[in-house]
Length: 134
Image (tube, rainbow, N blue to C red; front, side, top):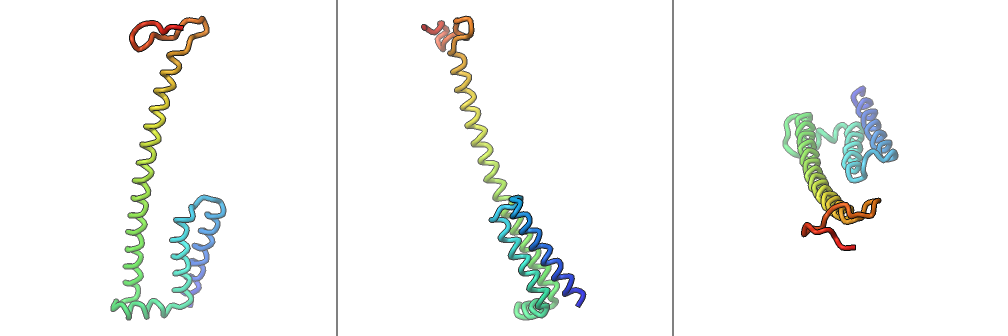
């Protein structure tokens, strides 16, 4: 009975935390979906503890807690794989943005080099080594 209450409290805490993070825009919806499913699963297991026993018997797992640990390991591997995939995409995007900024900076320096200074003389010479004609 105490474990059921603890499971209910923990499930509601997880769901409350996810909703709070969503409302403060600290967690994106695509990640919140997974955590909401986990919170609901925790609540279901707390309300119906026989569900885990039935599922372990159906799948042929001798001890229900072993099934719970196996599912947790699969979940953690899936989350790690997904975050690695997201990180790879973010690194690619950062590289592309850095390249774009470098190109824009080079173009800006070329434009500044061709602009006359405050004294009316060009800042630098043209690409051929001659002073640009005005």
